Every structure is written in structure tokens, then in C-alpha cells.
Length: 375
View 1 (cartoon, rainbow, N blue to C red):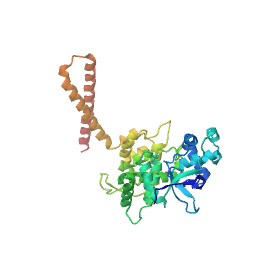
View 2 (cartoon, rainbow, N blue to C red):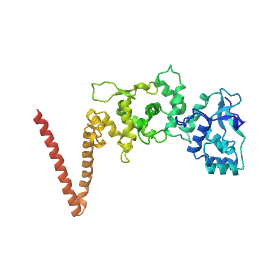
View 3 (spheres, one colour):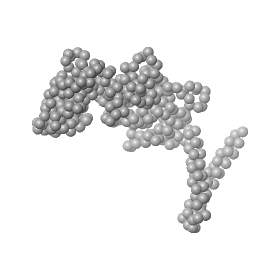
């Protein structure tokens, strides 16, 4: 596995069909892949830089031998730079090249033919390097591309190992944590199901518009994970939610399609410009709802998130938390009152607060009396 920099003619270099950044719906043909890279990555700036200064030899492409074409290579790291070089030579390698591409190609001072490369024997040898560079390194991929890369690493581990051991193997390869690897791969399995079902017909939702990081964050809540099948409850008899992980990346059939559709709609389907969940901070609320049958039924019946949450036990905890918070603030105010002057506005707020406290107390007292009547 030499690290010696060699050179090769750019025509002998091929784009990587397994590039984690390539959307699934892009055909794996040379022209289609090149066109997607050109149109989605502002290739004109890179074309201009290479056309003005030449190809920087300190940034060699990382390649491995083409399995079917002797003396040719597949580029694992550097697909965008290869695209820029190809377009400098011929902008019409891209479908409908922009006027800027044509102008850069026409006025360029450099048209690199020989490209610096570092050759690796196999793709597997390069994968750990990609992890350091694009996941824990300085040129981060977007979350979906990262997850696809992690799946490639995962699939390269021994199937004789348990899934948990395979997650740990991937984590050690790129310097991450096992639970982070699993969460990302769980989200990818859920995403793959959403994509397989054509995004459930949700308007405007697709591979390039979906917020994969939101999906991953949602599944970090074990209640939502259990809801879609990425975890399973240990004891159905217990009210406490104790779960153990499933492994949908290994066995996608554990996922519950109807629940995944619900989650996709709540997270991504917009009505009047808003989704059901709204901001990511509401995922905790959604977790409480999907764990409470009455609240879940209400949400599925198109009730609002806030209304459905009122049907969960979580609202009791929120209420007590707010009471404690109010008590703390009032205690702080009480410690200051001896040193402040009389203020009519402050007195008005005190009266209003006192009335609210009395209302809350009366409501709680009535609830207690109501419970007693039931006995």
C-alpha cells in the first residue's frame, strides 16, 4: 500500500459510482454523475482555480485500480477535482453546461492532462481515510452522505460479529462512538424505507430536501425509536419504557412502515408552511406522545402537537417543574423586597400573581376532591 505520488492521464480516471454523496436517483453513468457533481457543488469556482493556477500536486487524488480496465483507476477521494479537470477540457461532458463553464474553459491558461494520484490496492483501504477526512476531519460531508459512508464501512466488517461488535469496529476505525454509529445507521435504514416508499408522496420531499439530521435526532429519543421499530420494549407489562436496540440496518423488516410514515409526515410534511413537529426542540414532546396511546391516537386524528401532549403524563412533570421554577423566582424576589421602594406597577403584578396562585390552588384542590368522590 504505497503512498508514493504518481501521475496518470485524466482520461484514465473514473468517477466513483459508490460515492456516498451521490443521490440514489442519479444514474451511475459517467455523464450523469459528472453532471450532478457539476450542478450541485459550484464547480465553476474550482474550474477557474485549476484553469488559472494548474492542478496543485500537493492534493493528489486517491484511487484504486479499475476492476475491469487495466491501467485505469476509480477515484475514491477527489471526484470533484476530477470533474473540474474534465470540464476544463470539454464542458460538454456535462449536460447543458453553464455559460460560465464555457467561458472558463475557453479562457483557461492550464488544461491539466497528467493528474497526481496515490494508488491504493482496494477500496477498503481508502475507507478509513475518508472517515478521518469527511466525518471527523476538515471537509465534512452532509449527514446523509456520512451515513452512507458508515454503511459502507459497516458492510466491510465481518458478518460473523454481532451487530454491536460491528458498530464498535466502525467507531474505532474513524475515531467515533459506537452509539453514534448505530444512531446514524438506524436513521439511514428509516430513510431508505421512506425513499423506497417514494417519500410517501409528501410534497417537496426528496433526497436533496430531506433534513436527515432531524431524522437522526428524532431516533435518539428511545420512545420514537421504539415507535418506528428501531428499538423494542423489554417488558410490555411495565409502564417504564425500558428498551433494547434492534438493528434495522441489518434487518430492515423490523421497522414499522405505518409508524415510519407517521414520523415522516410529522417531521417533514408542511401545512400552511409548518410541520406538525415544527422545531427540533419539540421532539421531546413527540416522544412523550408516541409513548402514550391516547395522545398518539389524538395526533393521528390531526390534533395539534400541543393538544396531544396534554393527554400524556409528561404534562404533569412539566407543570410541577414550572411551579418549582416560579417558587424559586418568587423566593428571590422576596429576598429583595425589604430593600426596594414601593412601586404601583410592581404591586399590580403581585396582585395578579397572587390571584393566579389562588386559581391554581383551587383547581388542584377540586381535582383532589374529585378523586376522593370516586372512592
